[in-house]
View 1 (spheres, rainbow, N blue to C red):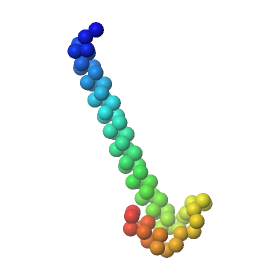
View 2 (cartoon, rainbow, N blue to C red):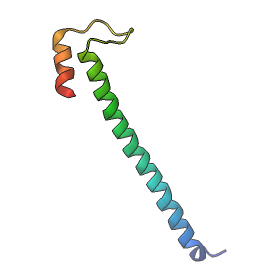
View 3 (cartoon, one colour):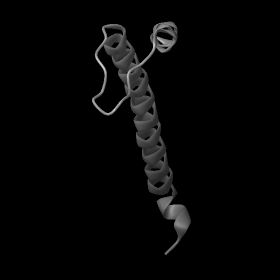
View 4 (cartoon, helix red, strand yellow):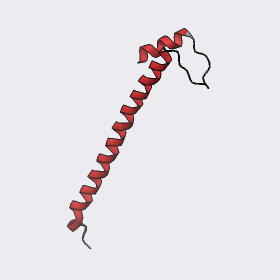
Length: 67
């Protein structure tokens, strides 16, 4: 079996894999920033997680600046 005969398929497979991984990285990055904005908005409105301790005013101001 000669690899040169299948080079088009091999290159296309690697290109498709790189495209899929790249798309996943972009998607996760965009989703991460959207979730951070949502959490900052909730914290600005005074909604906190049950497991989180009470936040002070400077922490809320910092969340507003990061949003």
